[in-house]
Length: 172
Image 1 (cartoon, rainbow, N blue to C red):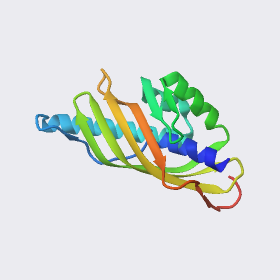
Image 2: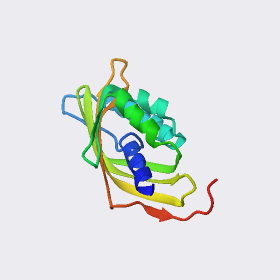
Image 3: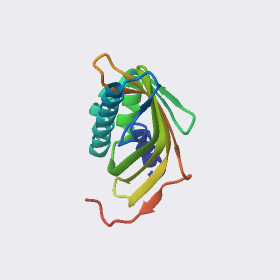
């Protein structure tokens, strides 16, 4: 059960957290970089809040319609509807307690951006002890017509084969 729950935390890892400021190609203006930085940071903040709250509806609205998740198992989930169905099923009984995603690099290339970095979180599956999971991620973002950034592609990996238990007493 803990391995399955850490998969969900890792799936969410592709979808949340604060980051390094984006860089752009040489022809971008300072205003463009600032605008993109603010918009990408807003995506990360909304995503992080939704992960901790278990708010799958908000998470879905942060994805493109054609979002693709490449999972550590090798499975590929294509489309918002398919990703949402799996996410809703897998978060049943799971409570994310903490979540942090730190991008090491964000590069904006026109209407797309890529980012990669590290993620870590703690969670509780049912009444099981609190567990910790961490790993790395890579995401491709796409700027919407409204100027917001959405998650178009995501992939992630774990640091170890199984999450580590962190005993914090009974479930709250």
